[in-house]
Amino acid sequence: MAGFAVSEEKNRWLQREMARLNVREEDLEEQFVRSSGSGGQHVNKTSSSVFLRHIPSGICVSASRERSQSVNRFLARRELLERIEAQTGAETGEMRRIARLRKQKNRRRRRAEKKDA
Image (cartoon, rainbow, N blue to C red; front, top):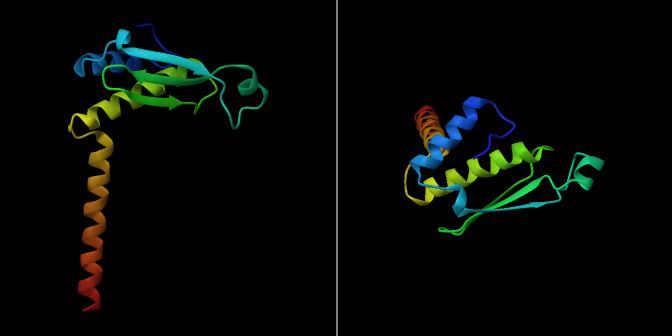
């Protein structure tokens, strides 16, 4: 796998995660399409948006947040890995963050109820 226009640390992390989840580059179908939104003439002229499909699971993701195609390729792979991990039932970092916020809100609600009573 070629490195993307992100730090070496992020490239190594992506390789480790792909190996951990048994996702191979050969299992990915990648398409480049024209982006929309902000970015002006640059996004109108180049195909910087990335559409990525994991063939074995059928999961599809699209990334067009950045103007750089290379960065969008990295972001698409990262999101694909998160979705694969969520599908396998493993708890992702985002799921842990949401659970922590839910606990905090419950504590605040209980305190407010005690205060009103």
